[in-house]
Amino acid sequence: MVFYFQPRGYGPGKDDYLIYMGADKFENEHLIRHSLPMDVWFHVDSLSSAHVYLRLPEGVAIQDIPPDTLEDCLQLVKANSIQGNKQNNLHVVYTPASNLRKTAGMDVGQVGFHHQSAVIRVPILKRINEIVNRLNRTKEERHVDLEAERAAYDREQRGKEKARLQEEESREKALKKQQQEEKARRSYDAIMLEENMKTSKDMAQTYENVEDYEDNFM
Picture (tube, helix red, strand yellow):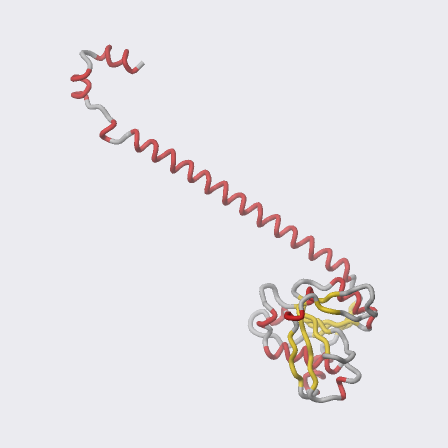
């Protein structure tokens, strides 16, 4: 089971932002394995907490998360930490989900990072009940097949990449054809230049009659 929340968004694409988290540490394992490339992972720093994910709209980078949406994620992850929910002045870390690293020796729900430099650490002073209560009013429980969802996403991306390559190939063929036609036109223009053309006076000076010209041409 996965819990979904509707955060405050920003601008025309605000409905494209989506927060979700696992019901328990076992569900978190599935989230780690099957999250999407546009997902951002949140966790209370150095304390146990829920794994909260923010799904970004296409084309939005982690550094461009709207402040209100970011605050929603920080408050939600704090509220879902048994220890962190009771403390003030703690920190939350977040990073692209693709930066999460899982090794065989780790406990269920435990993660590391491929690149520590891609982890952002921010302070959160206190719980803001107004934000947490609003998010909880949008809470929706869904039974989703995360593996199938990821497989469908990967198929879609492969289809887009295939279409992009085909379009690129078509553009290259069109450009090559245009270049060939331009080359042929320049060649034709060179043949038709005035200095390469013989006038009837030139022919009269060179050949005694038409039959001589035709014999020479052949």
